[in-house]
Length: 248
Image (tube, rainbow, N blue to C red; front, side, top):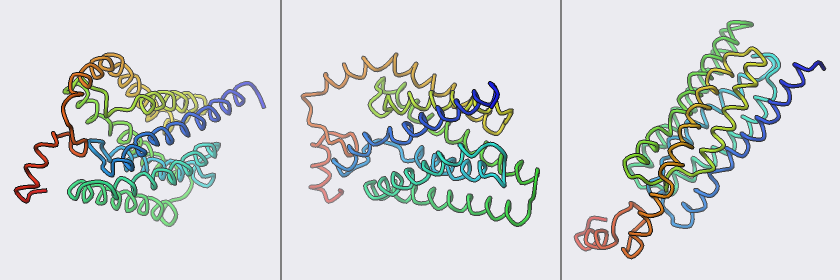
């Protein structure tokens, strides 16, 4: 193995490691969700879009679709299994309106993946199969990386990073960087382009965290004496008033 291939393989291994941490980072969030039996103001969209990205990327990395990308398949196959657990947990603990939205997205994700698999297996061969699957993986990888934009907007609006977990942002940056370099070394634009976008977005999240983390703590300390119902981020008094009026 020459130096170039060794470096390519090394970044693939590092990408697998950082991606695994990225997939496991939300465990803290889901521990909180399960404990409170509520999804609070967390968004389920990033987990659904991450699932689609994992499914399409795992398919793209298979040897009969693209060459020298088996490391892409192994980690994304693992990620898909983890994300399914997250999505189902989120659906179980979300309110009715949010549950319907996430369930609809979940069905959409499985449908898109099914169409890509069917078309690539039965209608395409060789380079056309690689191109089709690569484009699909790239498009939805970018959408996955862009899905936390709503959370970033909330951070700026509320000046609090409570609903943008630090480790998730950190490993978005590390994972995006690793696979960006892997794609460049392998001369694979379908790996390099979306992960370059992810690298930049992860860096933006870390910058926001650095700006607002202390402000968020100050805000939380100032509100510590107020009885807050974390289910919807509203005072318990308001919830009790709604309950008395029959509007739960």
